[in-house]
Amino acid sequence: MAAKRRRKLKLLAETETDGKGMASEGEEENLELRNWAELPTELLELVMSRLSLDDNIRASVVCKRWHTPAVSVRVVNQSPWLMYFPKFGNLYEFYDPSQRKTYSLELPELFGSRVCYTKDSWLLLYRPSTHRMFFFNPFTREMIKLPRFELTYQIVAFSCAPTSPDCVVFTVKHISPTVVAISTCHPGATEWVTNNYQNRLPFVSSIWNKLVFCNGIFYCLSLTGWLGVFDPVKRDWGVLVVPPPKCPENFFAKNWWKGKFMVEHEGEILVIYTCCSENPIIFKLDQSNMAWQEKKTLDGVTLFASFLSSQSRIDLPGIMRNSVYFSKVRFFGKRCISFSLSDSRYYPRKQCYDWGEQDPYENIWIEPPKDFSAFI
Image (cartoon, rainbow, N blue to C red; front, side, top):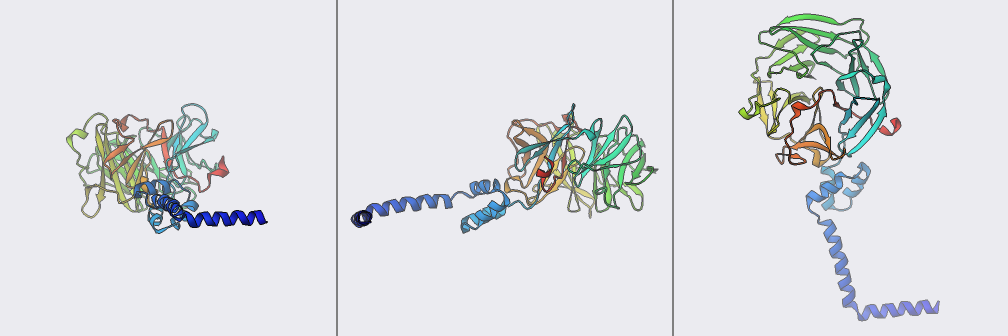
């Protein structure tokens, strides 16, 4: 005990005689703390966006300087996952762009089928060999069959989850440039209902058309940019007198008619036009004036574009906002190709992205489960 006390007294004496040295050491420590506290906002956002929700909340209360960046990138919504359909085998991959992780599931139930549409974690699929169409949830393995129906070159969409009594399946096929056949069905039905409609404007169906359900109406964008609308309750069909979005002349290049995407966001219809040598252009349908308006910003919204079904999200990490995420992953599955409207550039930079050359049935964005650990 005496030896311990002597050592403490010696340390105290050294402290008193070398106070200047101690102050210098304290200043270095304060400088180090100050450097961490005063990181640039961009770096703070990047760090905070990599944290889990719990860690983000903890970091936000460390100091006032950290609070704003932590809150700005806090994830309160899940981004959709990119589901890949293999050419061979039953192993399906799911890519999470927010975490840059890939998960895999064996789904033999999907053998011999091709994807048509997705909504609320449900897939709508078609088996060409049997003309069988069915719903499938890859996370719960639930399946809901529909009556047989022969799909040729038209696309299909549904309004909401097939477990809802309001679910309607819709497809449109042109008989001639001015006549279309509309077919609808719902889970539990024994047959499809088909009616022919006369168009005031030419409307041609194709696998490159786009379909979304918005405010109780199915919107279908044709190859040439005309917009058809169908009310499933009134069973009314018409082609809106809205001229196609006006694009620069250099957009009318190879595959220009294929590289288009359409998405619904909070009651608004958005269309993404792409060209291999130009940046994408986004248009919003002004429903009051019946005209397409070009958008220079998405106001923090993130769009996820794929040929058969596109989605939108809000409240994603800061680095993902005001961007369009396309259905292609590079760098060994670690980086999803995106276009930032804030920076007016693709990430990763470089390359000519010709989306018209991509296989439309290769992948699709799907809403993930709240807890994926139960399925792996």
